[in-house]
Structure formats: structure tokens, C-alpha cells
Image (cartoon, rainbow, N blue to C red; front, side):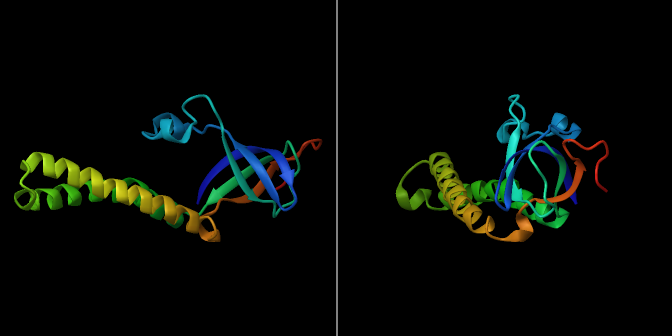
Length: 151
């Protein structure tokens, strides 16, 4: 399980908004600028309030490692593979289109990578409905107003 800690900012029915604290892993992550944590901003995540947390509570969120790995492969590896495949495809059509090989490769690579990003964006919407890819509140570490955290 990949876990992070955060503070509940808002409670709305069965959903809560949790502000994620920067973890030590963020300092060495190559993509820290893409998720917004590098710019000094915290990340806010909406999760189900299964444990009955309240505003200000310190909680632990987790995502199954398998789901995290699948999503990482989709987001990081698939666009690179698409860029390379598109470059090869563009190069193959260079003679038919009567354009220089390098130009056709660049256009083909960016075109296929752009289509891949569009497909990933549409796929992201369908993944949000699947519970296996959504973070879950696994523990309340410290309740506001109590002296000890729940275990």
C-alpha cells in the first residue's frame, strides 16, 4: 500500500476533502512539479468518509500498490511508447507524403503522443468511478479535541 497523511479540510455528507502533507518521497520525486506539491501548494483529495472523520482530523490515506503501479505505467510509460511508435510510423509514411524523414518522424511522434494523452484523459474519467484506483482513508491518526489518535 502507498500511504500518505493529511488533514481533513471539509466534510460534505459521505465525502471529505483531505489536504495531503508533503512526504519525504516528494523531495526526490522527478514529477513533484506536475502534481503541485513542489510549488508550495498542498494537494487536496476527495475520499469517502468511511471512518467518520471530522474537520481538522489527521488521517492516513492509502492506495493499493498494484493500482498505483498500473496508473504509473499508464501515465509515464504509455506516452513514451506512443512517441516512439508514432515516430517510426511517421518515418514509414515519409516517402508517401513526400516530406523529409525527420519531419515526418517528429510529426508522427507528437501526433500519436497527443492522441494518447487525449485517450488517457478520457480513460481517467472512467477510472474515477472504479473504487480500486481511488484513495481510501485507512486510519484516523489524531482526532481534533482528543489527546490520542485512533488505532
